[in-house]
Length: 504
Image (cartoon, rainbow, N blue to C red; front, top):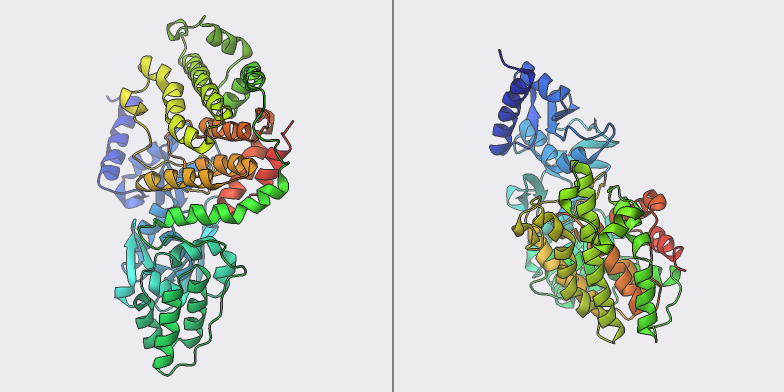
């Protein structure tokens, strides 16, 4: 007779076969009642709505939203494809946000269908689906992305509401920047006789510096006999020009986010004094704060470390072999890695204090920080040497966050764009606050992003004469809430104010 563990293993084998076949959600019909109940009881699947399940981790505590936010988009794609076949697509507004690489989980997702009943379907953690009866665009104006049926960019720009430009200016500008020629929207405008929308689009394109496209829209519509009046739907002009060619929408989003947030940071943050005149004294202060910084930074990430352990690591009185229990072993490895990375950061700051551009230094050295941080875990056999290679090559999700970091193929465009912005930015406070925020927003590594983001924060603070900043573990919730608000609502003020309050 099979043991309970053997029975669970058999159920997990079936779940894995479903996932290997590309199913990210599980319907009741996919599993027998026995397997379904066994997997649910042991925490490997959780019910979303009646008859629909998502995989989850058995070690998740009650109320943890991570599995749901991780599965949200795949669930929606498979759910609607099953219910409606091809008779659905996301709203034009949501389509534009996804085209602009904004994968933030919305509180309510609007979905169009010709046979919808205008129903609201409640989902976990105060999210929902609104199924709206509306005409779908012609099939040639529907595109598929990660299983989601979307309006194409030209069709979405014509169909979206005027208010969305003010509500989501970053998404709208990033989407507009993906249009290469006026002909992409003119066919829809002319066929539908959309003179008011043509004037709005002409104003929107001119707002982002695409004068040629704006003029082509106006001239062509007027030549066809339409009375078109240009109208800029954005509240403010764009103070810079987005590059026209080979521009990833995510790079556009980062640039637009930076320009939108920098003035808020300057207003919230005290002015720096400039490069410290006595580099030796500054570096001594950095060294003196190591124990405090390591304790709080590691504790924020959930490691349980003590000042005694940190001191033993610093003095070299430490070996992973002396730690018998797995949890203590991992804590000690994390502490050793932090010490090694901290030494590398000190060397980076020394170069910055000598007058080298801080963005150039950090662009080169953050890879060294990462390798030093995880080298002890590689040496102990917990990680593979290939894990030190660099940026992630798979999706990553932030625990309990509505923000979904960019897909792995976007990271290689996004990180150079961040360092370009750091190079161009004259204010050290902006480099520090937005450098940290956007680094963790991109989340380029599978692990260690928060710690490296705080190292980046402190190297940029050093370039402006600010003291090393320790973010207390006691204020972790405030810290994470402020980051979430910046990521999801594009509101940097709480994060800038929080960090400004920690300046000595």
